[in-house]
Image 1: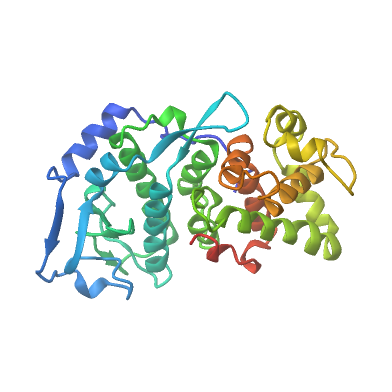
Image 2 (image 1 turned 120 degrees about the vertical axis):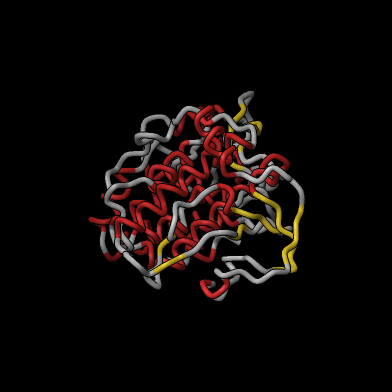
Length: 332
């Protein structure tokens, strides 16, 4: 995969076209429904009830769900006067589940028999996505069919963002990177691990600190593990990290983060190096209670450097190191 993070062709499709296409497929009820009739597709389940045609659980069609649970939300960047648009935790949970459904079927050499539509996506009361009216088949299975499944997922996700009232021109850069990954022409089966564990899908607003756990784990892999065992890999990763020229200016301009800069004790001052960018993020995340801002510090770090964790993860993936981490267990 190329080391690019921008939109690829088609990602900024005209919203009107997306809505028209969605209108042909989406159910219009917008209410909770139950089904008690078994489906012809029931035999295609993978064991996790991902294909749901007969369930006592209340499911809501995705269009109605995202209209009541915005996928794209605007949050204040605490410590500044700015705001930032990010994905809601409800959105990231739903998106990751859809990616997992595809990956799980691909792992047993099955692809969707027909292109995924927004009308196939249903959401349970806990926010977990399931598919209805979709069928997986092993006929004609190929890497190109796998890629097509992910391209269609990208299209559906953009439709749902538009339906939820989100402006696709305001998508955060890490989510743009995720959508770009879904449409990669040379996506491989190894890349599916990165798709379902993409850092853009980590939840932010919770008490469990999933993004902090993920960052500290990847930091240890890059700086401590590779720093001792393979410094060439570590240096390649560090050389590709973003924000190399301005991260310290950004940190000092944020009143909250600057507290860790000016009050640095028993350690050397921060310099404009990528290693110190990681060191600052590690120190802040390791002492979330230091200045009583533990409720918002994770979100502040994300809003100021939204691509940092993503590029750390992608570079570890490129170097063949990501699957040796525990990243898949950091999503809650």
